[in-house]
Structures are given as C-alpha cells and as structure tokens.
Amino acid sequence: MSLDPGKLRFDELTVTRGIVQTFMEDFLDSLDVDVAVAGAGPSGLTAARLLAADGLQVAVFERNLHIGGGIWGGGMLFPRIVIEEQAAELMTDVGIRLRPWQDGTLVADAVESATKMTAAAIDAGVRVFVGIEVEDVVINNDNRVCGVVINWGAVTAAKLHVDPLAVHSKALIESTGHPCEIADLLLRKIPGARLDTGDDCVPGESSMNAVQGEAALIANTREIYPGVVACGMAANAVGASPRMGAIFGGMLLSGQVAAQVARDIIASA
Ligand code: 48H
Image 1 (cartoon, rainbow, N blue to C red):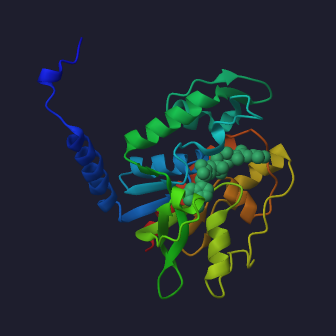
Image 2: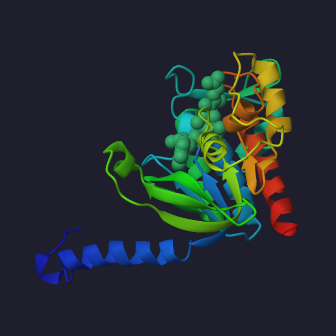
Image 3: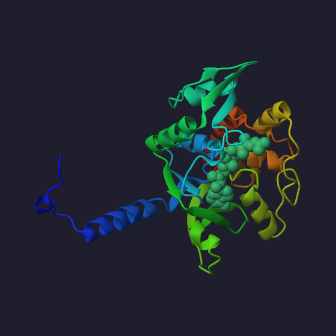
C-alpha cells in the first residue's frame, strides 16, 4: 500500500471543512436535547448510554479531552477497578471482561473499562462533547433548571473572558464527581435555591467507608433540584455520605438509577 501524491485529491481545506462543518452539524443538532450530562465519569457515561439506548437525545459535556473520569487512575494509579457483583451486568453488557475476586467483588482493567464504556455510550447514540465544560445552568421563570451554559474548558484554563453559549435540556444529570460543581453553583447563583434536603449549600462527601459509601449512592441518586439529577460521587457530596475508594460498582448503579429518574422527569414534563 502506498499513497501516490498524484492520486490524492484532497487539500488542506478539505480537512478544515470536514472538521468544522461536521462538528457544527452535530453541535447544532444538540442544542435542544432531552438530557444534558455534565461530566463523563463512569456514572454519567452509564446514565447517558442507557438513556440514548431508549432513543432519547443525550449530550454529554466533558471538560477534559478524555472521557472516563476517575476510572483511568484506578486505585492510586494501579489501573484496576473493583466492582460489586450487583453491578457486573452493567460492565459485561458493554463487553468489559471481569476477573472474579473476593467477597462478592470482581476486578476489571481500568483502560478496558474506560474505553469500552465510552465506545458503548457513543454506539448507543450519545453525543459526547469533549473539551467543553458546563459553567452554569439555564433557568426558566420558575427557577427550574432547563439547560446548561457551556464554554471551552481551555477558555477557563487560560482565564480568558469569553462569554458562553447555552443548550436546552429537559433534564440535567449532575455527574461532575467529587466537587459536585453544578449543584454547588446553582445553589450559589439561584436566589433562594435549596436542595431537596433543604440545604442551601452542598455539604460534601464524608471520609471513607467503602460499604456505607456504596450503599448510600443509590439513595442519594435522585432529583435534588427541579430538573437536576445527582449521580455518582456528586450524589454522595449532596448526601454528605462517605467516599468509598476505588470500588466503582456503585457509580454504574447510580448511573442506572439516574437514567430512570431522568426518564421520570421527562415523562412528567
Ligand atoms: C464538564 C466536568 C465538570 C464541568 C467536572 O470524577 P468522575 O469519575 O465522576 P463519577 O461520579 O462518575 O465517578 C467517581 C469516581 O471516578 C471516583 O472518583 C471515585 C469512585 N472515588 C472514590 C474516592 O474515594 O475517591 O468524573 C467526573 C467527570 C470528570 O471527567 C471531570 O473532568 C468532569 O466530570 N467534570 N465536565 N463540566 N463543570 N466538572
């Protein structure tokens, strides 16, 4: 196989137009979605995949250029994650191979997990926008969240003053992980905003207890503010529940519950 320059018909502008035009087509088609997902860690990716598999229009905004959140780091950079057997199907459904481990747990390779979860979400129809962060929410006249305000992650990193753009959504999944950024900012910015718990700020996660932290994730995954579903580690930050270390099954199960809560929000709209 060789590339004969005499037979290559493209030039640099073919490349430029191919990138700009197809991105714009996908972006314009994602301005008014059923579900916006802030953060592409394991919980947000799982929720997004399951919702897209139902035929809903789902856009994931991830500030980093890579998706998968904390999966890549495994535990202390050892690229393995542990999951409970209750979450095994959410892994094997996307082709991740599991190694039986002890006490009702299994082990997966972190690289395989991040890449296969990502591929499966995209195959299900999720639109993933990398390098784009959610910097605020859109609210309607009743202070219900009805979209996200987005900007390039690089703009924030460079501390540039660049006004953002907006995307409308029927439901927003807050899956920004430990900092729980979206819930935190909406409580600061929306006058009188309270979580469903009555709190006027995100209490934050508590210190490690693997079993309690995993168990709490499921109850903490719910509509925490009109139109906003807390998912994954962000849900435990809202619930002041323990962190759990590098066991990830609860994140996937939280994504599954968040998908159901988002479906309910859309159905009742
Ligand atoms: C766009 C954003 C924004 C923003 C953040 O941290 P994650 O992996 O989140 P989860 O909840 O799916 O999984 C948590 C898990 O990885 C973990 O940290 C565990 C199990 N910890 C236990 C312990 O004890 O420490 O992913 C969140 C993603 C990341 O990719 C961020 O870059 C992204 O969200 N993100 N994207 N707009 N405002 N904020």
